[in-house]
Amino acid sequence: MKLLTKEIINKLPAIGSQDGKDPKIVPIIVKFFHALSSWTWYATEMSKTEEGDYEFFGLVRGTDNELGYFRLSELESVKIHGLGIERDMYFGEHYLAEAMEARI
Image (cartoon, rainbow, N blue to C red; front, side, top):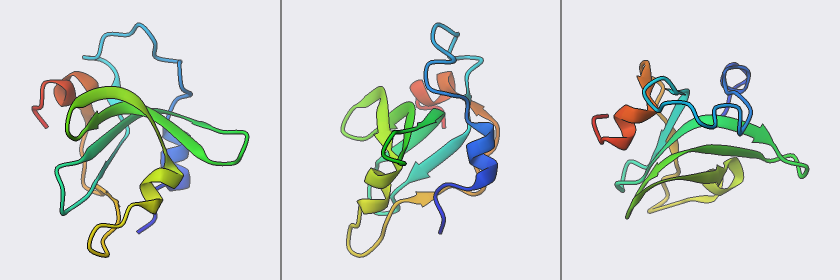
């Protein structure tokens, strides 16, 4: 499965463009997850790096829940028992506050 499509690239605002906004109005554009773990990544912003990678900003839910940065190359490199990270193709309209409160 392709983690990042042109449609998603066009929807994600640049990193830093939503600084200071209320999490209740910051949309989550894409959700990534690993089926064999509890790790989930909710991307709200993205920028292309000088190296040609894509860097996301959003909520990372794993051992802790924290806002932070993660890269496409990092997601693509994960393999647990042969399974990689997947994109939730059926993820509906949700906002950062919902993920921060663990409601989604």
